[in-house]
Amino acid sequence: MKIVIMGSGGVGGYFGGLLARAGHEVTFIARGDHLRAIRTNGLQVKGVLGDFIIKPATATDTLEKIGHVDLVLMCVKTTGTDKAAQSIKPIIGPGTIVMSLQNGVDAAERIGRIVGKEHVLGGAIWVAASIEAPGIIRQVSQYCRIVLGELDGRITPRAQAVFEALKSTSATVELSDNILKVVWTKFVFFASISGIGALTRVEVGSYRSIPETRVQLSALMREVEAVGRASGIAFDADVVNKTLTFIDNAAPAVKSAMQRDVELGHPSELESIIGIITHKGHELNVPTPVTDIIYAFLLPGERKAMASAKQ
Image (cartoon, rainbow, N blue to C red; front, side, top):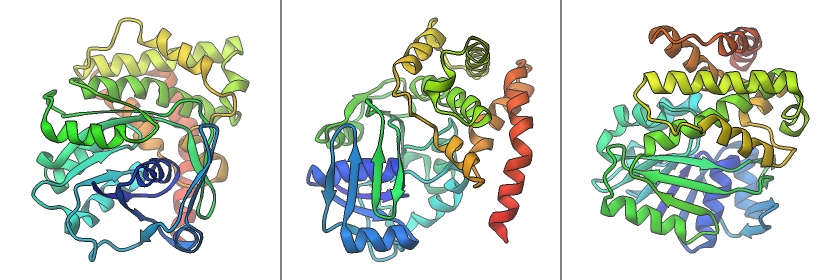
């Protein structure tokens, strides 16, 4: 497949590297020092699931000369979703598929409004990876899983084709007939570790076993579940208990991308990860007291980071 990785950070760099290693024609969209390092030294991946290097690696910061592609993996931060969706229009042909591997629950809808819903597949990923240095991706999780599917639940030839492409990598890949449920189930996990992690500023292994913190972790999960159910998502009855077990088995050093940004004073995905639950909860009359507190405590730092980034 001819594939563009829109955003070659931790997730994009890692999955793009896996696809390139499997023989697919992959173009990495990157910028600055990261782009220069990939062009010069290749894309290096260091991880608990194995090290490898893609050299030479095709990388650019412009899309106009790429031409139409088979698949675009959207891996930018959710704050850049709309801008990124506009920028990929030149590479969208009649059969191009666009799949979001972003955090949150509204990326596919936002992308579809810009490039056309008919191009969009739903996706969810489980991996902990980040840029360690320009051109170098560090993967720290024992898990590397991706689930994809049509937003309307059909099993289509194009979804099957993307499944087969991803299946050619070392990742665990699944094709789902209820991708929205999968995305929201992942969100129970991701919103909880992002919110609690950003407040505590420590790794998951340092807070998951503290009883007082675990109570709030569970409460946050139940609030996400309640908002999802009010939005029409039919979660499994034991979604919170399963998520807690997943967290208990995660590598102790895991931090979410949002937490890392908060710790560094960078603009984060606060609105898409925590704010969306607060706002949807209020709209749907679903109480979200823990989420509301986390959002309120993180919002001043977020606005400061955003103001600094604009200077």
